[in-house]
Image (tube, rainbow over the protein chains, first blue to last red):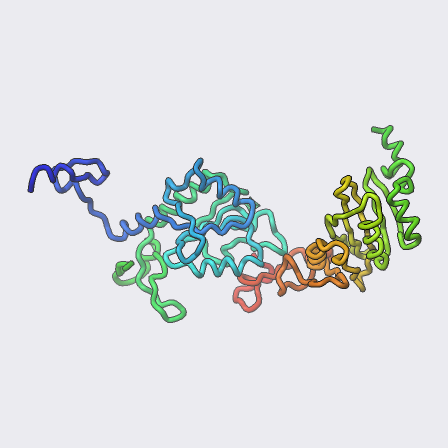
Length: 203
Length: 188
Ligand code: SF4
């Protein structure tokens, strides 16, 4: 092999160089690589209903710039999204809509509860407001605050990413309709409880 | 401060009383006994009237009064639970000409919580009256489309009535809803 060709090889960190082939690749586990790709490329669906929406705009705008952490590309269809951001007060009238949006999202999917209203009902303990969206849909990460500060949202995002990195491909499971799906990653702890070999997830 | 209070009288009513307000005076002159009471408080004029007189008074205020009250700002109600009559419907009118305001109040009995709809006079009354119906169960006779506006059709009762149980929840889905397991009656 010609010397010149060797010169353009890139190191794993992107710097050019490395005559030795061992510098041009790194080994990882399949599951780690998939989780790494997923946690840095969220396709978010902002379900924004109330005043927390202002803080959502702030944190996703250029100043706090969640693009840096992979929270990019709002998709205004749940079918193209994998992170549901529930931002603002959810009323009982809204609840069936929220659940339907969540059901329409393809797996794997995550839910961030953004603000006290979505966490617990917030200041509203009355006839109209759902007392925490986790009574309707599963929630992966709760961000407190009324509204949360941008730093809190980013902290929650990073914690969610840590969690996704720990998730493991689950074996295909039969859902209640009888069809088989790899509904979502199980966490490492959950995998430990599953007997038998863990099959790789096929995308 | 004490001087002002002395001028305004013990209730803070305007000097000269409500009779000094030209608008209230003209209402009183024109509708007589059907205006049950008038009051003026720190520049706010209020007329209490019998429900039967509402449409006439509203039309008069819109067309003949000077300034003309061309805008219905709000319709709401107050529940004086335990008092008779139990409800009071409140209309806020404003004149876009000189920004003057007047309030109309209608005492309504609990047994027949209904008043004439003002949609024929101010079309903007439509959603305001639907809200008052939704929250207080007041019926507006002649309203073209008297449905709930904020709450869902499955909701039973009217939540801003003082006898609506504070803790009562009526979720559509999730804990406590009809036909779903894990009901706790009152959400979490
Ligand atoms: S948590 Fe506070 S800021 Fe956010 S939607 Fe609720 S009331 Fe508004």
